[in-house]
Image (cartoon, rainbow, N blue to C red):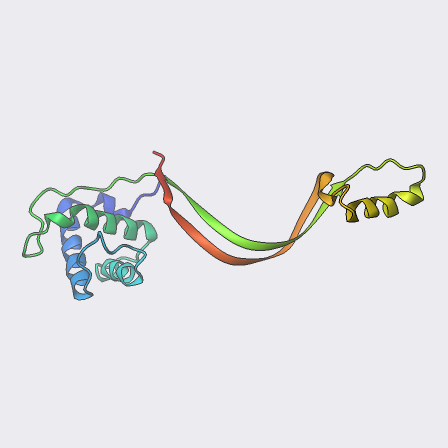
Length: 167
């Protein structure tokens, strides 16, 4: 399970960090964490820079923790950008999600077939003729081997609707 080093900080230090982050985000024009998230490169950099400004090398777990802490406590900031109430501390959880990858795959697939014939010499000519005329299909056999030797990705879609908390 992930663990940010900041989880161990006392509430006074965390409030100081949040105030620093709040001010930095305001300077960048980011006020509402509901509309802005870590996908916004500007927001991500502000969070990283705030951690650096406090003397730490930012790790992803730290960025995750601090922005989650900020989002959970955003409505607790008063007009002086101070938090008077007790902080709500985020807890790590595991999430499941899906990514759709659209790609063209170049591959060799081997299918094993059987064909009844009176002569070994006639099997391939007759099977090819039967396939050309639609009586059999190359895909009718049992797949026995597959070798994908190249692919081209045309699109990657992150399925936001698939996100589920699993613990």
